[in-house]
Amino acid sequence: MNKMKKYRIIARIHVQNAFVYRANVISGLLFYTLFIFVFFNLWRAIYEGGSVSGYTHGQVVWYLIITELVVFGCRTRIVTQINEDVKTGAIAYLLNRPVHYIAYQAAAAAGQIAANLFFFGLLAAALGFLFVGPIPDFQWAGVPCMLLSGALGVALQFASMTAIGLTAFRLEDNSAVYLIFHKLVFMLGVFLPVEFLPGWLQGIAKALPFSYVAWGPAKLFVGFSWSLFLQIVPMQMLWLSVMTGLSLLMYRSGMRNLQMNGG
Amino acid sequence: MKRHLKIAFLYFKVNLASAMEYRSSFLMQAFGMALSNATFVFFWWIAFSQVGGKIGGYDFQDVMFIWALCSSAFGLSSILFANVNHLTRLIVSGELDTFLLQPCNVLLSVCCARTSLSAYGDLLYGIVLLALTQGGNGAAWIFFALAVPVGAALITAVALTAHTLTFLLGDASIAGSMGLEFIINFCIYPEGIYQKFIRGLMYSVIPAAFIVHIPLRLARNFSLSWLVIWLLASALYCGFAVWFFYRGLRKYESGNLIITRL
Image (cartoon, rainbow over all chains, first blue to last red; front, side):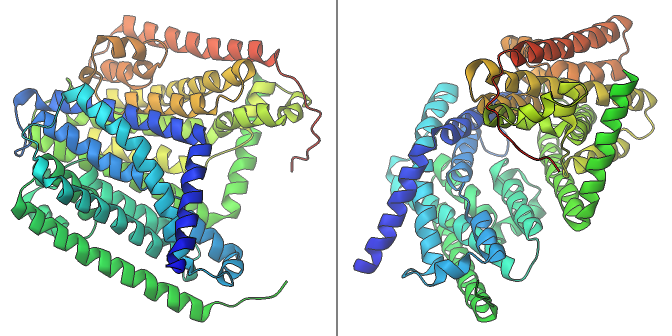
């Protein structure tokens, strides 16, 4: 129990930090609003001809609001932080503290993400109702499942970012790995629902982890069904396990090869 | 004027030489930016294949033209005048003193003092995208070549105006970053998706229309009157940004900070 207490304190400190840096919060909220506004207009122009791939205009706008909520909610410094810690050698000072390095980063990110989801969640709901009203045929009974899928999406993004950050043990410049992951998440689910992709690409997208960060939760949110839930959530759990395992393996391997010089 | 151009060119040469010192980082950032931009081609390809025809009055080639133009104009602006986005920090920290003491144009010296490595990727991406999507369309190439420097000047002017607010209101870094986000977002989507009020903004406060939409109109359907309106309005906007900066500069108070620029 005591073990968990220190991580709760770390998470709480990062929640407080998020509330202190108001300028960051305000600029993020403004950017989120601008983004949703631009895409609301774009989808309105696209939907002049009726529904696209089974989504109505209202559904697709809510879909984007949810995918962007996951993306903005997951905005943490995790990759940059691990990079800096490894490259500057600061990790040496963190290792002799009574916390596990990865668990410390997870607690810090959880605090930041909780604050992000609070700010952006309120704004997302307000913008959704303002632009297109309530989600058509929303399934209230499925809310716990949607929240579970959302939490898994956020956790998958965090585990992936940790694995990418830890590549700093091997790569001098890992920005390309981050960029490629980030862009694949955007292309395979954030901007467009997977159902909009060509048939051959949908199969590939649903087999890879990228779509389960944002597409999975957003799809359940706008068109919940139990069959969809049973299709998405097990895949999220599978990829979360893979990414977490990969992160821990990379961490252990990095620790074995870590060389510290006094000074 | 000749002296100013010479200073700007010298800054460019020094900044480029400095970037080439870290060649792999330079290439990685430039390539990364080009790759990042390329994801939007994928988005538009899917969007047009779902809808067919036009979106907001633009077809696929039109959208690629405004994308190419916006990317290259933004790239050129960030290659030559990247430091304009650091103006708020310079004012707030008192580092502007260093530029005021130099025996050359203050604004030019401030704007040119820094370059962006990823901006080379933006500039190149626009040219490659234009070649791939417009092919041998002479009008598209002519107006692209004309509009890239005009667009770069306008993008810089928007950032300059927003950051100049720091002289009057205190830290305006949010206004600076949002000004840039607004201008880019209004440049990369068809004008026709917005309603009248937003289009009004695009022809005035946020001059996105003068950066990409009017050059597209000229490339597709040339009109002398639109050409004159475009050039005059762009010059007026840039002139206002310069005037506003020097008005704001009168409010600057030095903190007697002593720093070294290497």
